[in-house]
Image 1 (cartoon, rainbow, N blue to C red):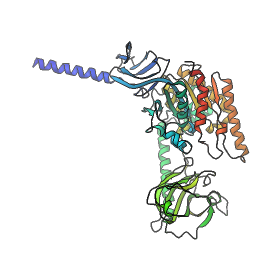
Image 2: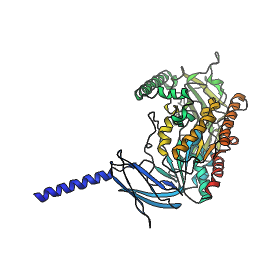
Image 3: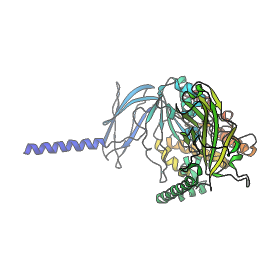
Image 4: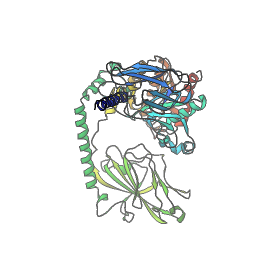
Length: 545
């Protein structure tokens, strides 16, 4: 009996010890497949039981163990010697194994939508090149999009490192993808991309609270929304507002009634108004000249031969300033909920038929003028290789007339909150430099931008412990029609503010981009040329290593 009792005590002690070992925790970015900065000590950190011993080692010859002890709050940090460029390596931290670790050049890529824009959005221009390329030594860590109102966070939300393979490439930042390809080809070493970006965000969202004392109004904006319960109640009410608006929209739209569906190819639309698809007049009230919010239905009859009708097809409907749903011969083929993504809808085999076919679009406008964007592709592409333009005359009818849609509070636009949640947790990660593509959302406050960006750069450099950390500013691309002289002047002034920062801040550079713009798209497609230019700016310092 005594021996049995001793056995139970011993087993309990072993289990308790194992449980203590299992409590060692690494931050989200320290995972399998990670890329560490060559030439820099491999920094490891995390949490454990207070007083617990932490042992780390690289699984290679002549590698020595490095030890640390968790402090009274359970925090610990240690450094392994720098790893020669290449890999893969295996790093052991107590009972945690980090496998497939590479050593190379790591870049923080941050900003708003033109940095976030994924590879899948540029396939119109680069589909063949993207499909033909894989390189598992190029890897991306996407920092999850979260906000933090109550101070800098110690860790990002869970994520993982992903290699540049066909399974993952479409979710890579397009700019970072082409940049990394160029850098890797020139250096021959792995490239790690830490993608911390979020569309529409202003520079102040990426600044620390301490750096913003010069802008008390912006800090007051943050303080208004610091109460978690208040923000939650706002979002709950917003959800109710949108639900009610949409409920009325669908209930009063005659094209959605059970008795008749306006996407039915058999519908007699001869009494509908003939309009030019790419003219905006159909989105306005003829008497008042005001924009008509609510639903707009457009139909186009096309005649196909047997070859065109034989297989699947692709419907290209450019971009629409609102939301839209598309139907071909009554079959739903796709929907997009906001303006910018290209409408590329797949028409399944068997939907098309020889002779008359009907393409129907239901556009939803909740504010502004409903219209299709000029100089985008509007056509159907058939399996036999032929195409048919869909520009020109369509038939139009207003469905439900609605007031403007309810407003929405975007908390990720709030000052400081992205610095806290998406930048501060990265400060222990050694990087070769930062690429910054942002500014579109600050054109309206451009006279403050140079000082704000300068303060942000100093802020980040302090956080990373590198007062000379290279910082590469991507110039805003040209945008807006030539006739919009005031808008174009504002964008030119914003580019001048960016150039001022590059000139005045040591070790900051401007990457030229204005000539790559598209007047009708705030997200120009040519991220390849831009990626090459960014690489050319970075490579002189990398090739010295």
